[in-house]
Image 1 (cartoon, rainbow, N blue to C red):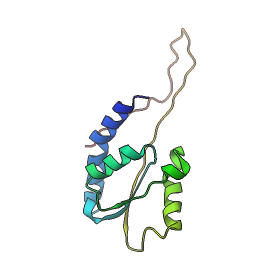
Image 2 (image 1 turned 90 degrees about the horizontal axis):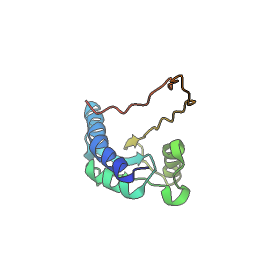
Image 3 (image 1 turned 90 degrees about the vertical axis):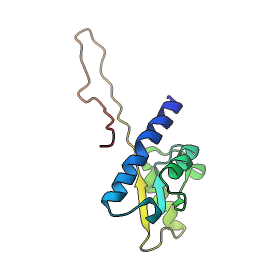
Image 4 (image 1 turned 30 degrees about the vertical axis):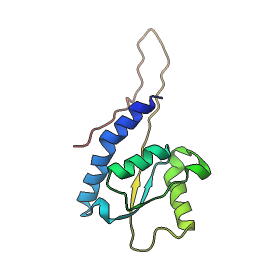
Length: 124
Protein backbone atom coordinates (compact mmCIF):
# COMPACT_ATOMS: atom_id res chain seq x y z
CA UNK A 1 0.00 0.00 0.00
CA UNK A 2 1.22 3.48 -0.82
CA UNK A 3 0.79 5.15 2.58
CA UNK A 4 1.82 8.61 1.39
CA UNK A 5 -0.50 8.30 -1.60
CA UNK A 6 -3.40 7.30 0.65
CA UNK A 7 -2.66 10.22 2.99
CA UNK A 8 -2.49 12.67 0.10
CA UNK A 9 -5.73 11.34 -1.39
CA UNK A 10 -7.54 11.57 1.96
CA UNK A 11 -6.27 15.08 2.73
CA UNK A 12 -7.07 16.37 -0.76
CA UNK A 13 -10.52 14.81 -1.11
CA UNK A 14 -12.18 14.06 2.22
CA UNK A 15 -12.26 17.55 3.85
CA UNK A 16 -14.11 19.16 0.91
CA UNK A 17 -16.57 16.25 0.81
CA UNK A 18 -17.31 16.43 4.55
CA UNK A 19 -17.60 20.22 4.56
CA UNK A 20 -19.91 20.15 1.53
CA UNK A 21 -22.07 17.52 3.22
CA UNK A 22 -22.25 19.59 6.41
CA UNK A 23 -23.18 22.70 4.40
CA UNK A 24 -25.98 20.82 2.65
CA UNK A 25 -27.28 19.85 6.08
CA UNK A 26 -27.16 23.49 7.18
CA UNK A 27 -24.28 22.86 9.58
CA UNK A 28 -20.59 23.64 9.88
CA UNK A 29 -17.62 21.83 11.37
CA UNK A 30 -18.06 23.93 14.52
CA UNK A 31 -21.51 22.35 15.02
CA UNK A 32 -20.10 18.81 15.17
CA UNK A 33 -19.87 17.36 18.67
CA UNK A 34 -18.54 13.93 17.82
CA UNK A 35 -16.54 12.73 14.80
CA UNK A 36 -16.54 8.99 14.16
CA UNK A 37 -14.31 8.15 11.19
CA UNK A 38 -13.26 4.88 9.61
CA UNK A 39 -10.57 3.61 11.97
CA UNK A 40 -7.53 2.98 9.78
CA UNK A 41 -4.71 5.20 11.05
CA UNK A 42 -4.85 7.35 14.18
CA UNK A 43 -2.24 9.87 13.04
CA UNK A 44 -4.04 10.35 9.72
CA UNK A 45 -7.39 10.74 11.50
CA UNK A 46 -6.06 13.41 13.85
CA UNK A 47 -4.70 15.31 10.85
CA UNK A 48 -7.99 14.83 9.01
CA UNK A 49 -10.04 16.18 11.93
CA UNK A 50 -7.78 19.22 12.12
CA UNK A 51 -7.91 19.81 8.35
CA UNK A 52 -11.72 19.61 8.43
CA UNK A 53 -11.91 22.16 11.24
CA UNK A 54 -13.17 19.57 13.72
CA UNK A 55 -10.64 20.48 16.40
CA UNK A 56 -13.30 21.04 19.06
CA UNK A 57 -15.24 17.88 18.23
CA UNK A 58 -14.54 14.68 20.10
CA UNK A 59 -12.89 12.32 17.60
CA UNK A 60 -13.82 8.88 18.82
CA UNK A 61 -11.01 6.41 18.12
CA UNK A 62 -10.95 2.73 18.96
CA UNK A 63 -7.75 1.73 17.17
CA UNK A 64 -5.78 1.17 20.35
CA UNK A 65 -8.47 -1.17 21.65
CA UNK A 66 -9.58 -3.07 18.55
CA UNK A 67 -7.14 -2.22 15.75
CA UNK A 68 -8.35 -1.73 12.20
CA UNK A 69 -11.50 -3.85 11.94
CA UNK A 70 -12.19 -2.78 8.37
CA UNK A 71 -15.73 -1.95 7.38
CA UNK A 72 -16.94 -2.66 10.92
CA UNK A 73 -14.83 0.16 12.38
CA UNK A 74 -17.54 2.86 12.43
CA UNK A 75 -20.25 0.63 13.97
CA UNK A 76 -17.70 -0.66 16.51
CA UNK A 77 -16.66 2.92 17.35
CA UNK A 78 -20.30 4.02 17.67
CA UNK A 79 -21.01 1.16 20.06
CA UNK A 80 -17.88 2.00 22.05
CA UNK A 81 -18.88 5.68 22.22
CA UNK A 82 -22.38 4.70 23.36
CA UNK A 83 -20.88 2.59 26.17
CA UNK A 84 -19.04 5.74 27.29
CA UNK A 85 -22.20 7.86 27.21
CA UNK A 86 -21.31 9.58 23.94
CA UNK A 87 -22.79 11.27 22.07
CA UNK A 88 -25.32 13.12 24.19
CA UNK A 89 -28.90 13.62 23.01
CA UNK A 90 -28.98 16.41 20.47
CA UNK A 91 -25.29 16.16 19.56
CA UNK A 92 -24.39 16.37 15.90
CA UNK A 93 -22.35 13.31 14.98
CA UNK A 94 -20.29 13.20 11.81
CA UNK A 95 -19.57 9.75 10.42
CA UNK A 96 -16.86 9.30 7.81
CA UNK A 97 -16.59 5.93 6.14
CA UNK A 98 -14.57 4.66 3.25
CA UNK A 99 -14.88 1.72 0.97
CA UNK A 100 -12.35 -0.25 -0.99
CA UNK A 101 -13.33 -2.35 -3.91
CA UNK A 102 -11.29 -5.40 -4.64
CA UNK A 103 -11.39 -6.96 -8.00
CA UNK A 104 -10.00 -10.07 -9.51
CA UNK A 105 -10.24 -11.71 -12.85
CA UNK A 106 -8.73 -14.80 -14.33
CA UNK A 107 -5.72 -14.12 -16.47
CA UNK A 108 -6.22 -15.32 -19.99
CA UNK A 109 -5.02 -14.67 -23.46
CA UNK A 110 -8.65 -13.98 -24.42
CA UNK A 111 -8.45 -10.64 -22.60
CA UNK A 112 -11.04 -11.31 -19.90
CA UNK A 113 -11.66 -8.14 -17.93
CA UNK A 114 -13.35 -7.75 -14.55
CA UNK A 115 -17.03 -6.86 -14.69
CA UNK A 116 -16.61 -3.92 -12.30
CA UNK A 117 -13.88 -1.36 -12.40
CA UNK A 118 -13.48 0.59 -9.16
CA UNK A 119 -13.38 4.36 -9.53
CA UNK A 120 -12.81 7.16 -7.11
CA UNK A 121 -14.88 10.25 -7.64
CA UNK A 122 -13.60 13.71 -6.86
CA UNK A 123 -15.86 16.09 -4.97
CA UNK A 124 -17.96 18.28 -7.27
